[in-house]
Image (tube, rainbow, N blue to C red; front, side, top):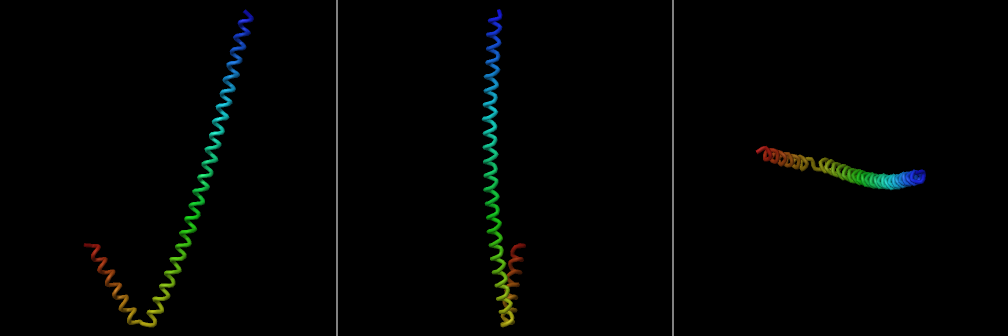
Length: 108
């Protein structure tokens, strides 16, 4: 009887050890997968931040270029209006008429 009891005890102990080893392996595997997912998420977030930064820099540069162009155009128009005030007045009236016609056309 003691022999059977010892055999049963050994079998149960072996089963418990095997279950513990399997559980440990599964936990290690899950931990590695979670760490890989976190690392990949960090990489993707970093790439997205870099792309966003590049986009902001490009938009800032283009905005600055546009502002410089607008400033140059305004300076040219101002100089032209000083040199030829009658021409500038006629041009302004023409632009006003065009804007009025477009506004009227959009209401109908």
